[in-house]
Image (cartoon, rainbow, N blue to C red; front, side, top):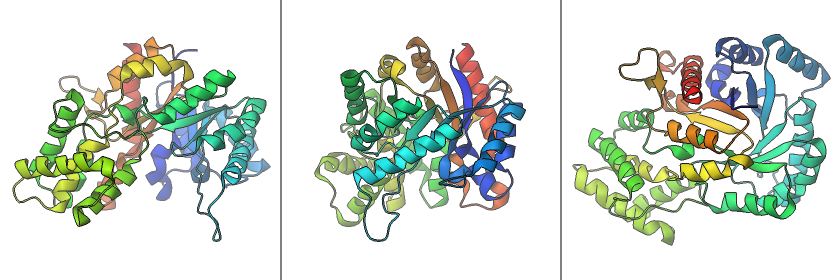
Amino acid sequence: MTIQRGVSLYSYQQSQFFKELTLEDQIREVGQNLGGADGIELVDEMSLRYPDPGDAFRRQWFAWMDTYGTKPVAMDVGMDVLQFRDHVMTIEECADRLRHDLRLAKSLGFTNVRVLSVVPIDVLLSALPLAEQLDIKLGKEIHQPMPLEGREVGEIMDIVERTGTKHLGIVPDLGIFQFRPSEVLLAWFQRRGAQESACEASVHLALQLREGKAPFDHLDMARHTAGNLRAEFNRFLTTGICQADFTEAFEGVKRYTDERVQNPQDVDYRAVAEALMLSQTSADTLRQLAPHVIHVHGKFNNMSPVPLQPGEYQEISIDYPSAIRALKEGGFHGYINSEYEGQRYFQDRGREDLMDEVEQVRRHQKMLRRLLAA
């Protein structure tokens, strides 16, 4: 088995919302129009009648797999711990939900189940015996801005080494190899009033942080999410207060902005702060961890033409060549599934200006074919 290609149907969220693509349409697109891609990854509550889609749906599901030559690769599960009015879900309640989701995945032919990066390790440990019994691999997503070198991966590796289990690993989201803010995100900031100089400063700061040449140290994001970091930075802008370990970086961003942007406003500071949201992870670490990778999220925000190469495309903000090379050299066997999320940066515009998700995924798959063949 070599590295294979698939698609997370999360990529088509906008088309599903507008009722432009049904679930069958999405599966057909993967099987018929992506040049050999055949893997299907989905988010259970997005694509299925959760918690039980019913036997009639299961029969239809497998019929679609046969008709379009596709394979169930990974089911992504959430963990809404606030779904009850009277309490926050306990660890064991979360584990019970995960055990249900493992059984659901098995009934639909999935061999991998992905949990979110913030799911506590105790939840995975509690559900792991059932995953082993069902022969399903549990993979914890490692998502920007978390690095592969952080505690989240370390906890997984400790369990694997201690137990020898073959049913627990990681799901790297290739957004962890993003090295500058995406051009579509910066355009979104500009439509909100950010100055062009602030967007340029954000890119420059990101590149300096990557090279270790920034005027302050990179922020350790091993246990944080981008959403939490943005909220904390907004609090800093409003009150001047933040978590102690954020102070140096937040003050550094403010100084950096003040030096490069004329009369900066809060939106300018927020645009520049996007340079902090990057994992700064190492491709060499991915190469070493490749045997423990369950599958890969091929995150991308925008596919743009490669200069002087008509018909070829690239993601200019993510170091795909290094990530793909690391997976190949590390001996990864499994699926890279396209996961398009750039549509969110166009949803402030009219529907006629919204990005074409189908075309974006087609371009991404073309890039994957090129890089995997290199």
